[in-house]
Length: 349
Ligand SMILES: [Zn+2]
Image (cartoon, rainbow, N blue to C red; front, side):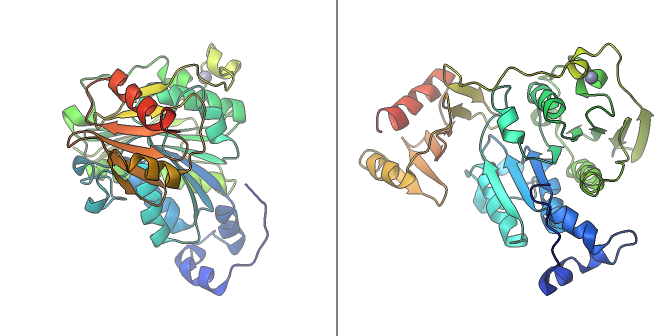
């Protein structure tokens, strides 16, 4: 809880949350707990979108939205937090903008970054509940370690095609991701892009995730602690399996993570959208107004409220965030994306 405020709800809040407050076993004090809870929504894609809509409507106090990609036309079918006009915008930014319209009571922190061992601890500091909307085991392994280290409960979910798996990891109480999945690797042939993903399985899985997040915020026992839930919407079946801690798991018996340090080189990651996310060795504080003015002499520049979009040529488009992160679309290699960072950020400033 970021500040334990025992405050009375305003009349407007009482009206906004009236159907929540009318629920059996849900008091005004419970609503206060929800409003004092910080959630990290990791990934604003297929699972993240319906989860974010629920978190926002319910009135969680602060939501960190972490995503590294931009909105594409092929996302809109299931990523229900975006509108068609959001195509090309960073997902974290577009989500925060749209969700603020739904519930201005909620504070959003959009962060356009690719999760790794170096940044995850800083990203999760001060967070009460982690909600999984990721699409890679590499990122999830970093999240698992940070959740153990910072003792933050981690609502895990993964979904593809018609299937979803869910469980809730509570440090020191349940097993961890490594206990259950070991060194699971992503199968490049079994991704949303190859086998598709049904919007309905995402919506059900997101509802289960947020049901768990509510229980954690209220200090109640979540239903998926030490239980794995599987959903199959091709036959509409829901199954539950008892799981637990692996006594030989060295990840949760000695939680540690490589200390947060500045990378020596640029981080360049290829994204689902076939763009590249480029992150500097340490977060920058760019003055987007003056950068936009300088770049305007050479390129076509579109200044948005929290980022700028630079058109290098008809194919190549670069989105620049104030922390110095870039999303580069239209280049064929990581090297070409890195070169644009040097040209647009380092050499201009
Ligand atoms: Zn473990």
